Image (cartoon, rainbow, N blue to C red; front, side, top):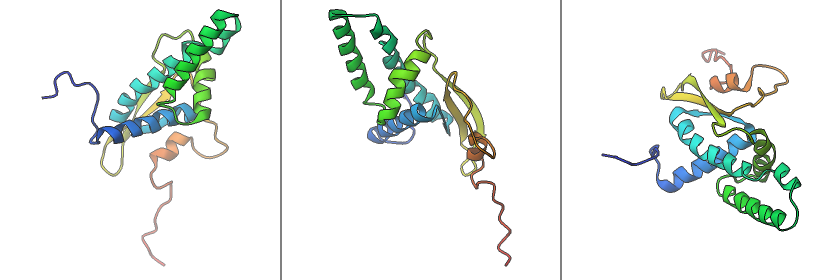
Length: 166
């Protein structure tokens, strides 16, 4: 029995699981919304919220009002948080977003930075799917065609096979 064992194993060993979560956190920070299974989304939420919390501890606007020794101490603490977040976010642009845009956006919010929507079932194995997104994220801009979520829901891309008659 797995009493007092936190976290889901998801049928992977620990190094694979950790790498998968790192990739998913990075993708979530880059895109703001990703589609995955429900279990992965619920587990991903833990890591994504920790990274955003690291980002908002000392925001760029907090540094503006400081000077002297206080400024140096705040910069050192911010650098430490950036280095800690780098363990989970492997894209420099995503890391800049976390410590810039997301830090300012969620400055007054006491947690709960992600939202999980149920998104039906996957075609191949009927696994429950979910969309995890950052709260207060604008909908994705598309030039033409259906939204990104609708395209992701259709695994064949809308093409209908004609049965092979030629």
